[in-house]
Every structure is written in C-alpha cells, then in structure tokens.
Image (cartoon, helix red, strand yellow):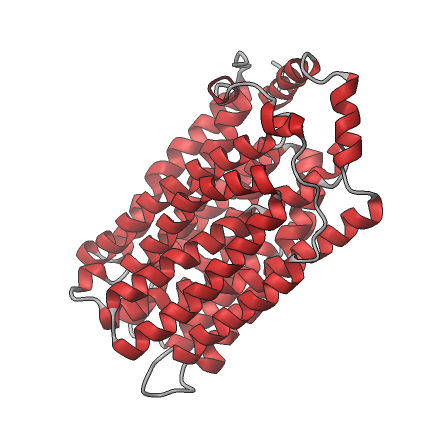
Length: 424
C-alpha cells in the first residue's frame, strides 16, 4: 500500500504543475533571497525566536499565579493564560493579512509592538491590582506569540524545497535560548520590587520585545508579488487534501495538549506545596525540551517522514501524562513537562513540515495562516477547559482527560498511514 504522505505529496505536486508555468517559476526565482541573505534571515529569525520566546515563558510562569492572586474567584485563576491563547487564535489571521499585503517583516514588527504593550500593561496591572487589565495584557502577549510562530514558515521561504524542513527546524531551535532566558528572567526579577510581585519581570518582558524588534528589522524578505497576492486555488479545495487534514489535526492536538497540561502545571505545583523557583525550573526544562530537538528534527522528518515523526510526538505526550499520574513530587512534574516538550516538538514540527507540501508559493500565506488559526482555535478551547478542570477536579483528572484526543489522533494517523486516501 502506498504511503499516504508520499501519495498526498504526489497529488499536490500534480495540482501545482498545472498552475506553475515557467513564468511563475521566474517570479519565484526573482523574489527568493540569495544564499547569503537567506542565511542571514535564518540567523536573525532564530535569534528573534530566542528573544521572543521569553514572552511566552513569562506568561506561562506568571499567568496562573497572578490570576490566583488577582481573580475574583479561584475558578478564574487560569483565565489570563486562556486569554493569551485567545489572543493567538484571533490575531493569526489578521497577521496573515498584514504579511500577505505588506510582507512578513511588517507583521513581525507589529507583533513585537504587541509584545511591548503586553509587558507594560501587565506591569501596570500589578500596580493597580487589576485582574481584567492583566487579562488584556495577556491578550497582547498572545498576539505576539502568534506572530512569532510564523517565523518558522518565513525561514522555509528562503531555501530550496529539500531544505525547508531543516530551515524550519533551525529557527525553532532558537527557542532553546528562550527556555533558559525566560524562566531565569522570572526568577531574577520577580522579587526586585517586593510590593508588586512580577512588576520588574513584566518590564523586562517589554524590553526584550524591543530588542527582538531591532533584530527583526534587519530581516530581508521580499514583499509579496502580484502572483502571490492574487493566485492559487480556493481554500475549500486545499483543505480537502489528506496531507492538510493530517497536518492540521496533529498540529492542533499536539499544541492543544501541550498547552492544556502546561497551563495547569505551574498552578498544580503551587497547590501541591512546591515553590515558585521549582515551577520556574520545570518550565525552563520544558521549554528547552520543546526546542532543543529542533537541531535534528528536520533530519528525522527527511529520513522517516512527517507522519512517523508526528506519531512519535503523540506517544511522548502520552508518556508525559502517564508520569504525571504516577505521583506529585517535583520530579514527577518536571519529567511530565520535559516529555511534554519533546512530544510537542515532534508533533508540531512534523505537522508544520507537512503543511509546506500542501500549497504553492502563491497560496502559502493563506494556507499557513488557516493552519495556525485551526491550531490556536482548538488550543484556546483546551486552555479554558484546563483551568476549570484543575479547579474543580484536580491535576489527575487534567491528565486523564488529555488521553481522549491523544488516542483519537494516534488512531487517525495509523489509519491514514495504512491506506491511501484520495486527494481533494
């Protein structure tokens, strides 16, 4: 039986061949950066990924704790983190519109501006003890995070097709530094202004976003051509492709489960009597585990295929939940977070690589934005459920619930791997 991933690629390549004449190939050659510029773009995007990743780490390290301190009800403690994800979901399509009309760099700089606003608003919320203002700040933080995740696709634009997965992975590898910088940023600054917990942390969050913007300003990506603005198949036809269904489903479930468990973990550690420093360190290793494999994930995808790498990621997420159910010591939380990060990396990067096979250059912005909207939309739902389940039923139930979408997705991947599906 033919590998559905390869079959799907052949199908979309066949569709592309009917659209891409020698004229459009010329357009692609003209608009693609040269080798030196492409390498510079990848390095700048990797550095910006490292800096911007601190935004998400600060949000997850402080969001539930600030929510628990400021919320009018304990049930709302994780609402700021859910609002963070809502910001990601609602802003990814507008960011795609900006990128499609004015170029990716314009979208990147707008995102960095949202990161600055997020840090300053959060700091002010600590001064006035405003829960709702803090929620607004996390919305802007989510908008920034949504734009940051498009860095991976921008890197893939700059290289030959056979190098796209590696370029995507190298930019995501910049998150390793975020895994070190983000938690330590919280640990070093959270008590510098004792009357206002995390106030200096949020100021530092804004400052790091400014530095990230300076790095991104040097990214040299071409503005969209007339072909890219007006060409391509209807989205309704693209989303029926088997490989797009696989990519969107696995990307969404990987990210949703990662967020579902990570949202609850810091507060669960707090409720089980573990220190903030222990929680910060757990998040540090979690974020490192999310991004460190990116140095070789691209090679794994090239060798074994995206579907197999995605399946491995889902199994690692399942193992993380199993360890969490085994106990509530600090070590249990840490290993849960580490395996969760590894599973997310394989699942999400495998899905992202598969998305690249689903579109032509003229379709890329619309397809990538739609994929991320699906991912973040489902992720927002999981984030809202996480806080409520943790508050009402406890950490163990959060872990058990995660197995439901996990088993469904593994079964769907196995089914798709075992049979050839018709192209859309």
